[in-house]
Image (cartoon, rainbow, N blue to C red; front, side):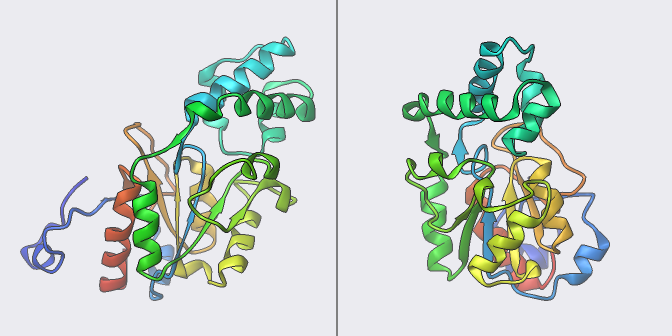
Length: 240
């Protein structure tokens, strides 16, 4: 991360450390930023839920069961897209292997947890008056078994086209009754950043200690707790 550079900015931000502004911040997206941020759309796996390694393990076990060669390095970049699309990129019966993966992942539920700053941050965002929604490629049957930190969500069962198509995010915007430019999208992979950029939202890539990058990200943050300071900065200055 880096701090705001000028003394004047530092004073106005009361020494708050701002997330790293991406060098790829789109000028066209920047020009749209006149609206205040009124809501957040979060990805689930790898963003709010510390589940990436277990998701990869669940997929690997499903492919192994069907005799399909796969590896963590092959699966990892595909996490976030609809399950059937992931299978089609590696091989095998999309419906069967996706169902096996969901079953495998359900066995790891006791090992999965939210990142420690998720619940406090969600409470802060709600207290600040922000509308929140989750967009995920998970199935509704899985989500109904989970204690979600945010009540509104759009899952793969709600859409025809999943990430990186913008359809799930358009449905999320309908749920929270906001326009794209009024929303910050927070995710951990490029499939979250692409639709955010297309809708004119602020695209924020959360790293959680991983060395991840996206040409579509407007900002990088290290953890979910940096969300509200960034929103306050954008709302105060009127631009990223």
